[in-house]
Amino acid sequence: MTEKSALLKELRIDRSSEPVAARARGRPYWIVGVGAVLLAAALWWLLSGLSKAAPVRVAVAQALPSGGGKAASILDASGYVVARRQATVSAKITGRLDQLFIEEGQHVTAGQVLAKLDDTNARAALQQAEAAVQQADASVAQAKAAAEDVTPTYERNRKQAEAGLISDEALEASKAAYDAQQTALKVAQSNLAVARASMQIAQRNLNDTVVYAPYTGVITTKNAQPGEIISPLSAGGGFTRTGIGTLVDMDSLEVEVDVSENFVSRVLPDAPCTLKLNAYPDWEIPAYVIAVVPTADRSKATIKVRVGFKSRDPRILPEMGARVSFLNREDAGSAGSAASAGVTLPQAAVGPGASDTTGTVYVLHDATVERRVVRLGAREGDIRIVLAGVSAGERVAIGDFATLADGARIKIINP
Image 1 (cartoon, rainbow, N blue to C red):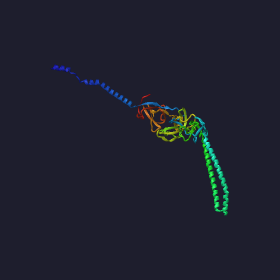
Image 2: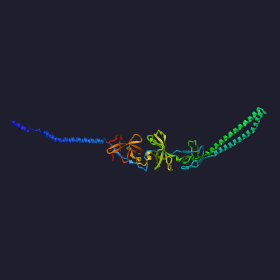
Image 3: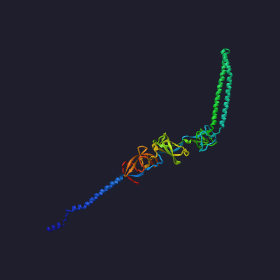
Image 4: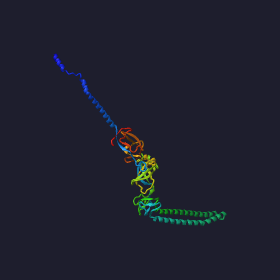
């Protein structure tokens, strides 16, 4: 029994030192686990920070070419060249066109004969009126002679009646004859005045058969041919013409443009501007604002602006398309300076501002952006002119403005 117990005791495993050795062997795995957790947390923080950074593209502000002192545009608008003085020239009376002396493109001066109507009827009416004047004049002479004949008799009878040599009845008869002749003379003189007025009307009708140029200009259209009926009262249908042609005063040319109600505050009377004709896109013409027409077009939400030319040129023609660039007064006065030149940015880089003349941009500084309010100029397609707030060469963010703020972190998705 003692020997068995001793043998069993020898076979028993001693575990008193095993936990220490096991803990010693498991400690490196515990350290590795903690390190893995810390590494995962660092990676999560890094990825979370990157996911919160707003993705943006980069645009570089480009300086506007100085152009030898060219001021920056604050607003652009399109319109057409129009003539303030343009007329359809016609006769004052209805008649058949007998002679025509105009052609398209012809320069005419004020008072020049442009056409003649058939005047046979007008001449016959004038002759009739002249004959009526002669007849009325003869009637006046006859009435005057009759009045002169009765005047001495009446005067004699009046004196005799005062002396009591004739009765009152004889004096009254003499006075009645005298008054009748005086009245007949006045009637004849009035008929003569009417006949002379009729003759003047007939003379004017004859004069109106000749069409004169009302002012100096250029014939742009010829609307009639000899043989056609000209009538100022016609609606222009059938074979009746309202006029012989259209006369345009080239010195009255100007440009009319429609400006949106949202931007009309930028346009002021007498403000400087430049314009380019569609036919001559490389020709910059100095101009100025004549007036802002004080009414709006509700269908288009625009206001008409009249723009005048500072110099005339024969290349400027009515109905030409034109593009007007309105300039800031201060910029125009300091043309050539770096401040007035401004920079250009893509329209997508400019966010909304407090007014129609301001906007918001975000300038890049390493991994963050700085919010700036800028003064805006004209827009040309997808390009926007920035007059102040950004310098040439600065990098600006293009992205979702809802995710951008002053000091916000960004990540560039294009170099």
